[in-house]
Image (cartoon, rainbow, N blue to C red):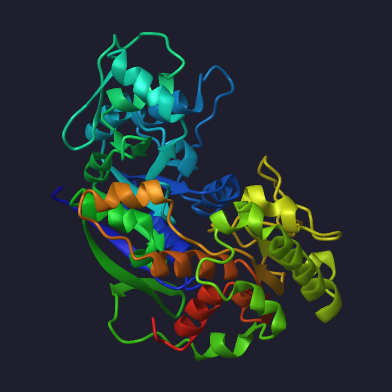
Length: 417
Protein backbone atom coordinates (compact mmCIF):
# COMPACT_ATOMS: atom_id res chain seq x y z
CA UNK A 1 0.00 0.00 0.00
CA UNK A 2 1.60 3.27 -1.14
CA UNK A 3 -1.05 5.92 -0.51
CA UNK A 4 -1.80 7.31 2.92
CA UNK A 5 -5.27 7.46 4.45
CA UNK A 6 -6.18 10.77 6.11
CA UNK A 7 -7.62 10.07 9.56
CA UNK A 8 -9.60 13.13 10.65
CA UNK A 9 -9.54 12.37 14.36
CA UNK A 10 -11.58 15.08 16.08
CA UNK A 11 -14.00 15.00 18.98
CA UNK A 12 -17.68 14.54 18.23
CA UNK A 13 -19.39 17.79 17.28
CA UNK A 14 -16.23 19.59 16.10
CA UNK A 15 -17.29 19.76 12.45
CA UNK A 16 -15.81 16.71 10.72
CA UNK A 17 -18.84 16.18 8.46
CA UNK A 18 -19.13 19.94 7.90
CA UNK A 19 -15.51 19.95 6.71
CA UNK A 20 -16.26 17.05 4.34
CA UNK A 21 -19.28 18.91 2.92
CA UNK A 22 -17.14 22.02 2.44
CA UNK A 23 -14.45 19.92 0.72
CA UNK A 24 -16.93 18.38 -1.71
CA UNK A 25 -18.56 21.72 -2.48
CA UNK A 26 -15.23 23.41 -3.26
CA UNK A 27 -13.47 20.62 -5.16
CA UNK A 28 -13.12 20.85 -8.92
CA UNK A 29 -16.23 19.42 -10.51
CA UNK A 30 -14.08 16.87 -12.36
CA UNK A 31 -13.21 15.25 -9.01
CA UNK A 32 -15.69 12.52 -8.08
CA UNK A 33 -16.62 11.47 -4.54
CA UNK A 34 -17.95 8.38 -2.80
CA UNK A 35 -19.32 9.31 0.63
CA UNK A 36 -19.94 6.32 2.93
CA UNK A 37 -21.92 6.67 6.16
CA UNK A 38 -23.60 4.27 8.61
CA UNK A 39 -27.17 5.53 8.09
CA UNK A 40 -29.48 6.36 5.23
CA UNK A 41 -30.56 9.64 6.83
CA UNK A 42 -26.95 10.85 6.60
CA UNK A 43 -26.95 9.85 2.92
CA UNK A 44 -29.90 12.21 2.49
CA UNK A 45 -28.03 14.97 4.32
CA UNK A 46 -25.14 14.79 1.86
CA UNK A 47 -27.51 14.81 -1.13
CA UNK A 48 -29.27 17.87 0.26
CA UNK A 49 -26.29 19.91 1.50
CA UNK A 50 -23.75 19.43 -1.29
CA UNK A 51 -25.91 21.53 -3.58
CA UNK A 52 -23.49 21.94 -6.49
CA UNK A 53 -23.19 18.19 -7.08
CA UNK A 54 -25.82 15.68 -8.05
CA UNK A 55 -25.09 12.90 -5.55
CA UNK A 56 -26.68 9.60 -6.51
CA UNK A 57 -27.77 6.87 -4.11
CA UNK A 58 -27.63 3.19 -5.15
CA UNK A 59 -31.17 2.03 -5.82
CA UNK A 60 -32.58 -1.46 -6.33
CA UNK A 61 -35.79 -0.04 -7.86
CA UNK A 62 -36.60 0.96 -11.42
CA UNK A 63 -34.73 -1.91 -13.05
CA UNK A 64 -31.44 -1.28 -11.27
CA UNK A 65 -31.13 -4.85 -10.02
CA UNK A 66 -29.57 -5.17 -6.56
CA UNK A 67 -28.19 -2.14 -4.74
CA UNK A 68 -24.69 -3.53 -5.29
CA UNK A 69 -25.32 -3.69 -9.04
CA UNK A 70 -26.65 -0.13 -8.88
CA UNK A 71 -23.50 1.02 -7.03
CA UNK A 72 -21.30 -0.57 -9.72
CA UNK A 73 -23.31 1.15 -12.46
CA UNK A 74 -22.96 4.53 -10.75
CA UNK A 75 -19.18 4.05 -10.45
CA UNK A 76 -18.95 3.04 -14.12
CA UNK A 77 -20.88 6.22 -15.03
CA UNK A 78 -18.59 8.41 -12.91
CA UNK A 79 -21.36 9.72 -10.66
CA UNK A 80 -20.92 11.31 -7.24
CA UNK A 81 -22.21 8.66 -4.84
CA UNK A 82 -23.55 8.64 -1.27
CA UNK A 83 -24.09 5.20 0.24
CA UNK A 84 -24.00 3.17 3.45
CA UNK A 85 -21.31 1.18 5.20
CA UNK A 86 -23.41 -1.97 4.82
CA UNK A 87 -23.48 -1.70 1.02
CA UNK A 88 -19.84 -0.64 0.66
CA UNK A 89 -18.80 -3.66 2.76
CA UNK A 90 -20.22 -5.92 0.02
CA UNK A 91 -17.41 -4.89 -2.34
CA UNK A 92 -16.43 -7.76 -4.65
CA UNK A 93 -13.85 -8.25 -7.39
CA UNK A 94 -15.99 -6.52 -10.02
CA UNK A 95 -16.41 -3.41 -7.86
CA UNK A 96 -12.68 -3.39 -7.11
CA UNK A 97 -11.95 -3.60 -10.84
CA UNK A 98 -14.27 -0.64 -11.52
CA UNK A 99 -12.58 1.45 -8.81
CA UNK A 100 -9.15 0.66 -10.21
CA UNK A 101 -10.13 2.44 -13.46
CA UNK A 102 -11.89 5.36 -11.74
CA UNK A 103 -10.67 8.55 -10.06
CA UNK A 104 -12.66 8.80 -6.87
CA UNK A 105 -12.06 10.34 -3.46
CA UNK A 106 -13.48 8.24 -0.63
CA UNK A 107 -14.91 9.95 2.45
CA UNK A 108 -15.91 7.50 5.16
CA UNK A 109 -18.05 8.92 7.95
CA UNK A 110 -16.96 6.83 10.93
CA UNK A 111 -15.07 3.57 10.79
CA UNK A 112 -16.81 0.54 9.34
CA UNK A 113 -16.94 -3.13 10.24
CA UNK A 114 -13.77 -4.33 8.52
CA UNK A 115 -13.66 -7.80 10.08
CA UNK A 116 -16.43 -10.04 11.36
CA UNK A 117 -16.93 -13.62 12.41
CA UNK A 118 -18.95 -15.81 10.06
CA UNK A 119 -21.34 -17.76 12.25
CA UNK A 120 -21.03 -21.47 11.52
CA UNK A 121 -20.90 -24.61 13.61
CA UNK A 122 -17.49 -26.18 14.15
CA UNK A 123 -18.78 -29.35 12.47
CA UNK A 124 -19.59 -27.40 9.30
CA UNK A 125 -15.98 -26.31 8.98
CA UNK A 126 -14.66 -29.83 9.50
CA UNK A 127 -17.14 -31.17 6.96
CA UNK A 128 -15.94 -28.70 4.30
CA UNK A 129 -12.30 -29.55 5.06
CA UNK A 130 -12.82 -33.33 4.93
CA UNK A 131 -14.95 -33.03 1.80
CA UNK A 132 -12.25 -31.06 0.04
CA UNK A 133 -14.45 -27.98 -0.51
CA UNK A 134 -11.88 -25.74 1.18
CA UNK A 135 -8.17 -25.71 1.90
CA UNK A 136 -6.29 -23.73 4.57
CA UNK A 137 -2.83 -22.28 3.96
CA UNK A 138 -0.19 -21.66 6.63
CA UNK A 139 -1.50 -18.15 7.35
CA UNK A 140 -5.02 -19.41 7.94
CA UNK A 141 -6.33 -18.11 4.62
CA UNK A 142 -9.26 -20.14 3.24
CA UNK A 143 -9.13 -21.29 -0.40
CA UNK A 144 -12.29 -22.55 -2.14
CA UNK A 145 -11.48 -25.78 -4.03
CA UNK A 146 -14.87 -26.63 -5.52
CA UNK A 147 -16.17 -25.09 -8.75
CA UNK A 148 -16.85 -21.34 -8.25
CA UNK A 149 -20.51 -21.79 -9.20
CA UNK A 150 -21.00 -24.91 -7.09
CA UNK A 151 -24.40 -24.42 -5.39
CA UNK A 152 -24.01 -24.94 -1.66
CA UNK A 153 -25.49 -24.07 1.71
CA UNK A 154 -22.18 -22.38 2.40
CA UNK A 155 -22.39 -19.83 -0.42
CA UNK A 156 -21.20 -17.04 1.90
CA UNK A 157 -18.05 -19.06 2.69
CA UNK A 158 -17.56 -19.73 -1.03
CA UNK A 159 -17.94 -16.07 -2.04
CA UNK A 160 -15.63 -14.69 0.67
CA UNK A 161 -13.03 -17.40 0.06
CA UNK A 162 -13.05 -16.79 -3.71
CA UNK A 163 -12.51 -13.08 -3.03
CA UNK A 164 -9.51 -13.96 -0.82
CA UNK A 165 -11.03 -12.37 2.28
CA UNK A 166 -11.69 -15.37 4.55
CA UNK A 167 -9.50 -16.79 7.33
CA UNK A 168 -9.76 -19.73 9.73
CA UNK A 169 -9.06 -18.88 13.38
CA UNK A 170 -8.15 -21.52 15.98
CA UNK A 171 -9.62 -24.20 13.68
CA UNK A 172 -13.08 -23.32 14.98
CA UNK A 173 -14.28 -20.14 13.26
CA UNK A 174 -14.13 -18.18 10.03
CA UNK A 175 -13.36 -14.46 10.04
CA UNK A 176 -14.20 -12.25 7.06
CA UNK A 177 -11.75 -9.47 6.29
CA UNK A 178 -12.70 -6.44 4.16
CA UNK A 179 -10.39 -6.23 1.09
CA UNK A 180 -7.72 -3.75 2.20
CA UNK A 181 -6.51 -3.09 -1.34
CA UNK A 182 -9.64 -0.99 -1.93
CA UNK A 183 -8.14 1.86 0.09
CA UNK A 184 -5.30 2.13 -2.42
CA UNK A 185 -7.64 2.56 -5.39
CA UNK A 186 -8.84 6.07 -4.52
CA UNK A 187 -7.15 9.37 -5.29
CA UNK A 188 -7.64 10.30 -1.62
CA UNK A 189 -9.22 8.64 1.41
CA UNK A 190 -10.63 10.45 4.45
CA UNK A 191 -11.89 8.70 7.59
CA UNK A 192 -14.00 10.92 9.89
CA UNK A 193 -13.88 9.61 13.46
CA UNK A 194 -12.64 10.12 17.01
CA UNK A 195 -10.07 8.08 18.93
CA UNK A 196 -9.02 6.03 15.94
CA UNK A 197 -6.39 4.25 18.06
CA UNK A 198 -9.23 2.52 19.92
CA UNK A 199 -11.00 1.13 16.86
CA UNK A 200 -10.61 -2.16 15.02
CA UNK A 201 -10.12 -0.42 11.67
CA UNK A 202 -6.82 0.95 13.04
CA UNK A 203 -5.57 -2.55 13.86
CA UNK A 204 -6.84 -3.81 10.50
CA UNK A 205 -4.79 -1.06 8.80
CA UNK A 206 -1.74 -2.09 10.83
CA UNK A 207 -2.27 -5.72 9.82
CA UNK A 208 -2.42 -4.85 6.13
CA UNK A 209 0.29 -2.15 6.22
CA UNK A 210 -2.14 0.59 5.22
CA UNK A 211 -0.37 3.89 5.94
CA UNK A 212 -2.26 6.73 7.60
CA UNK A 213 -1.75 10.25 8.98
CA UNK A 214 -3.74 11.97 11.72
CA UNK A 215 -5.49 15.33 11.34
CA UNK A 216 -8.02 17.34 13.30
CA UNK A 217 -10.64 19.86 12.23
CA UNK A 218 -10.52 23.48 13.39
CA UNK A 219 -12.99 26.23 12.59
CA UNK A 220 -11.81 29.71 11.60
CA UNK A 221 -14.79 32.02 11.18
CA UNK A 222 -17.16 30.26 8.80
CA UNK A 223 -14.54 27.88 7.41
CA UNK A 224 -13.31 24.47 8.51
CA UNK A 225 -9.64 23.60 8.08
CA UNK A 226 -7.48 20.53 8.63
CA UNK A 227 -4.36 20.62 10.77
CA UNK A 228 -1.94 17.97 11.94
CA UNK A 229 -3.33 16.32 15.06
CA UNK A 230 -1.82 18.08 18.05
CA UNK A 231 0.12 16.17 20.68
CA UNK A 232 -1.14 18.60 23.31
CA UNK A 233 -4.02 17.44 25.46
CA UNK A 234 -7.62 18.25 24.58
CA UNK A 235 -9.48 20.55 26.92
CA UNK A 236 -12.09 18.22 28.42
CA UNK A 237 -12.84 20.33 31.49
CA UNK A 238 -16.23 21.39 30.15
CA UNK A 239 -17.31 17.77 29.67
CA UNK A 240 -16.10 16.96 33.17
CA UNK A 241 -18.56 19.55 34.47
CA UNK A 242 -21.42 18.40 32.26
CA UNK A 243 -21.24 14.59 32.56
CA UNK A 244 -22.64 13.59 35.95
CA UNK A 245 -21.72 9.97 36.68
CA UNK A 246 -23.87 8.13 39.21
CA UNK A 247 -21.98 7.16 42.37
CA UNK A 248 -23.80 4.96 44.83
CA UNK A 249 -24.66 1.47 46.00
CA UNK A 250 -26.25 0.50 42.66
CA UNK A 251 -22.68 0.33 41.32
CA UNK A 252 -21.86 -2.59 43.62
CA UNK A 253 -23.09 -5.04 41.02
CA UNK A 254 -20.26 -4.14 38.64
CA UNK A 255 -17.17 -4.33 40.86
CA UNK A 256 -15.71 -7.40 39.17
CA UNK A 257 -13.56 -6.66 36.11
CA UNK A 258 -15.74 -8.82 33.88
CA UNK A 259 -19.12 -7.91 35.38
CA UNK A 260 -21.69 -6.92 32.71
CA UNK A 261 -19.64 -8.54 29.94
CA UNK A 262 -21.46 -10.69 27.40
CA UNK A 263 -20.45 -13.88 29.21
CA UNK A 264 -21.61 -12.40 32.54
CA UNK A 265 -25.11 -11.90 31.14
CA UNK A 266 -25.15 -15.40 29.65
CA UNK A 267 -23.91 -17.19 32.79
CA UNK A 268 -26.86 -18.93 34.46
CA UNK A 269 -25.23 -18.36 37.87
CA UNK A 270 -25.77 -14.60 37.45
CA UNK A 271 -29.57 -14.68 37.10
CA UNK A 272 -30.14 -12.93 40.42
CA UNK A 273 -27.49 -10.32 39.61
CA UNK A 274 -29.11 -9.61 36.25
CA UNK A 275 -32.45 -9.24 38.02
CA UNK A 276 -30.81 -6.83 40.47
CA UNK A 277 -29.42 -4.80 37.55
CA UNK A 278 -32.91 -4.62 36.05
CA UNK A 279 -34.22 -3.18 39.31
CA UNK A 280 -31.31 -0.73 39.49
CA UNK A 281 -31.97 0.50 35.97
CA UNK A 282 -35.65 1.08 36.71
CA UNK A 283 -34.76 2.82 39.98
CA UNK A 284 -32.25 5.14 38.24
CA UNK A 285 -34.71 6.20 35.55
CA UNK A 286 -38.02 6.23 37.41
CA UNK A 287 -37.24 6.98 41.05
CA UNK A 288 -33.95 8.88 41.16
CA UNK A 289 -34.52 11.04 38.06
CA UNK A 290 -38.27 10.57 37.43
CA UNK A 291 -37.38 10.69 33.76
CA UNK A 292 -40.03 10.52 31.02
CA UNK A 293 -39.33 8.23 28.08
CA UNK A 294 -38.44 11.23 25.93
CA UNK A 295 -35.39 11.90 28.10
CA UNK A 296 -34.15 8.31 28.54
CA UNK A 297 -31.35 6.70 26.52
CA UNK A 298 -29.78 3.37 27.45
CA UNK A 299 -27.99 0.37 26.03
CA UNK A 300 -26.70 -3.13 26.60
CA UNK A 301 -25.94 -6.07 24.28
CA UNK A 302 -28.86 -6.35 21.89
CA UNK A 303 -29.72 -9.95 22.74
CA UNK A 304 -29.56 -9.16 26.49
CA UNK A 305 -31.97 -6.21 26.30
CA UNK A 306 -35.08 -8.11 27.33
CA UNK A 307 -33.37 -9.30 30.51
CA UNK A 308 -33.17 -5.82 32.03
CA UNK A 309 -35.63 -3.57 30.17
CA UNK A 310 -38.52 -2.06 32.09
CA UNK A 311 -41.89 -0.44 31.53
CA UNK A 312 -41.63 2.92 29.86
CA UNK A 313 -38.19 2.55 28.30
CA UNK A 314 -38.43 -0.55 26.10
CA UNK A 315 -38.76 1.20 22.74
CA UNK A 316 -35.87 0.42 20.36
CA UNK A 317 -34.60 1.99 17.17
CA UNK A 318 -36.75 0.52 14.34
CA UNK A 319 -35.13 -2.08 12.13
CA UNK A 320 -36.00 0.01 9.08
CA UNK A 321 -34.39 3.44 9.09
CA UNK A 322 -36.88 6.06 10.25
CA UNK A 323 -37.10 9.42 8.51
CA UNK A 324 -38.07 11.05 11.81
CA UNK A 325 -35.48 13.69 12.69
CA UNK A 326 -35.96 13.28 16.46
CA UNK A 327 -35.14 9.81 17.81
CA UNK A 328 -38.09 8.36 19.71
CA UNK A 329 -36.33 5.21 20.94
CA UNK A 330 -35.06 4.80 24.50
CA UNK A 331 -32.78 1.87 23.64
CA UNK A 332 -30.10 2.20 20.93
CA UNK A 333 -27.12 0.02 20.01
CA UNK A 334 -23.98 0.53 22.11
CA UNK A 335 -21.92 1.08 18.95
CA UNK A 336 -24.24 3.59 17.32
CA UNK A 337 -22.41 6.51 15.69
CA UNK A 338 -22.88 9.40 13.29
CA UNK A 339 -26.42 10.41 14.25
CA UNK A 340 -27.80 13.47 16.04
CA UNK A 341 -31.33 12.11 16.50
CA UNK A 342 -30.90 11.57 20.25
CA UNK A 343 -29.35 14.87 21.31
CA UNK A 344 -32.47 15.71 23.36
CA UNK A 345 -31.77 12.76 25.71
CA UNK A 346 -30.07 13.55 29.04
CA UNK A 347 -30.75 10.61 31.41
CA UNK A 348 -28.47 7.80 30.27
CA UNK A 349 -27.44 4.27 31.24
CA UNK A 350 -24.61 2.24 29.69
CA UNK A 351 -25.24 -1.30 30.96
CA UNK A 352 -22.47 -3.37 29.46
CA UNK A 353 -18.75 -4.06 29.72
CA UNK A 354 -17.12 -3.99 26.29
CA UNK A 355 -14.50 -6.56 25.31
CA UNK A 356 -13.37 -7.65 21.87
CA UNK A 357 -14.85 -10.83 20.40
CA UNK A 358 -12.26 -13.53 21.38
CA UNK A 359 -12.17 -14.94 17.83
CA UNK A 360 -11.45 -11.49 16.39
CA UNK A 361 -8.81 -10.94 19.09
CA UNK A 362 -7.09 -14.22 18.16
CA UNK A 363 -7.27 -13.27 14.48
CA UNK A 364 -5.17 -10.17 15.20
CA UNK A 365 -2.87 -11.82 17.75
CA UNK A 366 -1.97 -14.63 15.35
CA UNK A 367 -0.77 -11.90 12.98
CA UNK A 368 1.22 -10.10 15.69
CA UNK A 369 -1.23 -7.22 16.09
CA UNK A 370 -2.26 -6.44 19.68
CA UNK A 371 -5.60 -4.73 20.27
CA UNK A 372 -5.87 -2.27 23.18
CA UNK A 373 -9.17 -3.44 24.71
CA UNK A 374 -9.46 -0.47 27.07
CA UNK A 375 -9.22 2.03 24.20
CA UNK A 376 -11.69 -0.08 22.21
CA UNK A 377 -14.16 -0.01 25.11
CA UNK A 378 -13.67 3.70 25.80
CA UNK A 379 -14.11 4.58 22.13
CA UNK A 380 -17.51 2.87 21.96
CA UNK A 381 -18.59 4.40 25.28
CA UNK A 382 -17.67 7.94 24.20
CA UNK A 383 -19.31 7.61 20.80
CA UNK A 384 -22.48 6.41 22.51
CA UNK A 385 -22.52 9.15 25.17
CA UNK A 386 -22.07 11.77 22.47
CA UNK A 387 -25.33 10.77 20.82
CA UNK A 388 -27.00 12.56 23.77
CA UNK A 389 -27.52 16.15 24.93
CA UNK A 390 -23.81 16.48 25.76
CA UNK A 391 -23.41 17.03 22.01
CA UNK A 392 -25.08 20.42 22.42
CA UNK A 393 -23.12 21.29 25.55
CA UNK A 394 -25.96 20.36 27.89
CA UNK A 395 -25.58 18.37 31.14
CA UNK A 396 -26.35 14.65 31.27
CA UNK A 397 -26.71 12.12 34.08
CA UNK A 398 -25.38 8.62 33.41
CA UNK A 399 -25.49 5.27 35.19
CA UNK A 400 -22.49 3.05 34.31
CA UNK A 401 -22.70 0.00 36.60
CA UNK A 402 -19.48 -1.59 35.27
CA UNK A 403 -16.59 -0.25 37.36
CA UNK A 404 -14.17 -0.86 34.48
CA UNK A 405 -16.23 1.20 32.02
CA UNK A 406 -16.90 3.89 34.61
CA UNK A 407 -13.20 4.22 35.45
CA UNK A 408 -12.30 4.50 31.75
CA UNK A 409 -14.68 7.42 31.33
CA UNK A 410 -13.32 9.14 34.45
CA UNK A 411 -9.75 8.73 33.21
CA UNK A 412 -10.71 10.25 29.87
CA UNK A 413 -12.40 13.21 31.59
CA UNK A 414 -9.25 13.71 33.67
CA UNK A 415 -6.99 13.54 30.58
CA UNK A 416 -5.34 10.38 31.94
CA UNK A 417 -6.10 8.56 28.66
